[in-house]
Length: 247
Image (cartoon, rainbow, N blue to C red; front, side, top):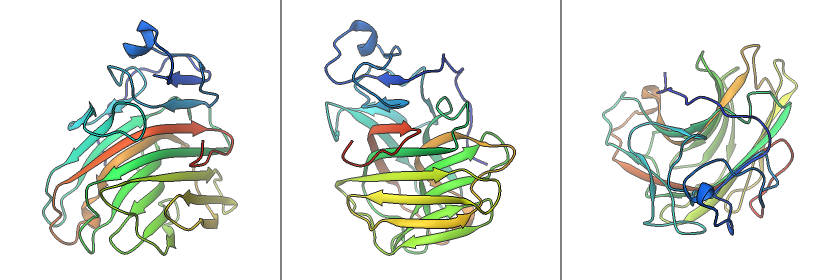
């Protein structure tokens, strides 16, 4: 089960954090910036001094000026080398936008991955999960392809292309929630073909509530030794209406 120690939720409503062009002290100090130039349920370009109160993080997650998709900094996630069967979750998570479940939502992010997982291993890049119970919907990166995966019924659909390493790329992940087989998952990207997994179950009565970005390896998906990886995440959007890589 992944690391989970969520910060207390703040008030609901449209949330924007560190919005470009906002020079207020509150925004620079990481305080909530309500819908100034954002227009989405949540957007963050990580130009603040802190990830709190919006984000929860595991160890080896920090704001970093080494590289950024836009602006001066991004979130840097560093995973250690793993032995066969070893699990590790180095992640950035939030549970505010799904606290009142939307039937349909989109998650968009820009990513810079130092290297692909070792051949035979699978890494969760984006996840929408239950708060407890361990089930969810995922974008999974492998050395041969990129998968849409729902753990509720163990269904997968492959985007028959590999994400690039050592450069920025975009993923937009769409989830149509359903506790029966009427749901769907979809992926659009600037580097991958559009891919849809449907019809399928994508939720449960427990309800998915947490969105994760990161380098996440379940031990069952580490079939060969896994070298250390670095991931940068930037320009994140979560919204209850369509978003694309152009937003």
